[in-house]
Length: 285
Image 1 (cartoon, rainbow, N blue to C red):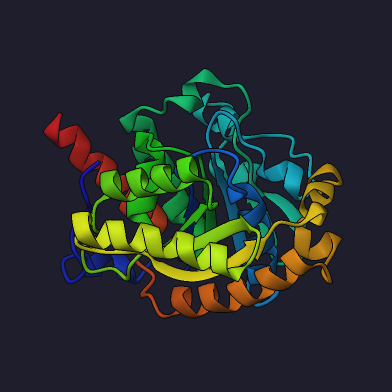
Image 2: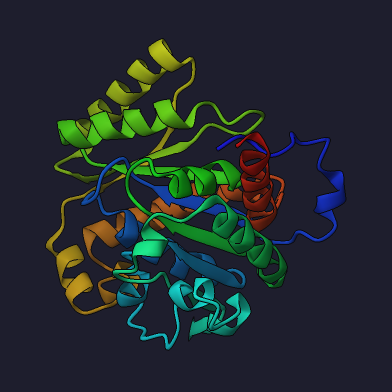
């Protein structure tokens, strides 16, 4: 999906924008992307009003990790039965959720017109928030790439597993350099120790720099911890379920790094840029 207009050419958008956006992605499933999104959303909400957008369309599970049971999902919106603002689900004070559909084929392969419409509706909604956290599907679908390119900040979650690192690099390769933006952030999850995490981060950075001309910024690592598994089964974000465990302690430090970088970015509007990118795709089709 092509980029929307560069900064400097998009000033008419800015007056309507409030929320800063963070897109959380992974090259493959099983890296802990949704666990990361769940905890970061809770921590962002302690500072300002936050919207967690489950952009893992078709197999969304962000509601499970928040212990919520929304009545409606994006499937209802794209089916024409609900408006986007009508499906906003309150998880707790300062944290709202838009749930992705589960087992909905149309969501799994979202059309460009649907993506454009979704962006337009999100643009109206995100003005009510300070932060929007998009938990995107694993891999390199056009929907995930669209969200990744439209967001103000991007966080890639991987593990030290060779296949996970290879897929993280593949995602960076397909994404390309986000022009004028800060580099993507890189989180190494489920590492045995800091040395293993550092080696994985360096490997991805070195290959990316050599072949892509840019490298992600390593912002921290999370150790392997049984408490993560338990928190998922209990349907609670890790930072609430076991705030004193070693993995949660790591997430608190990572959040400080992520928030600093997100706050340093000018909020350009996730929905606006998502819709603009889709519109460019339609014109080029």
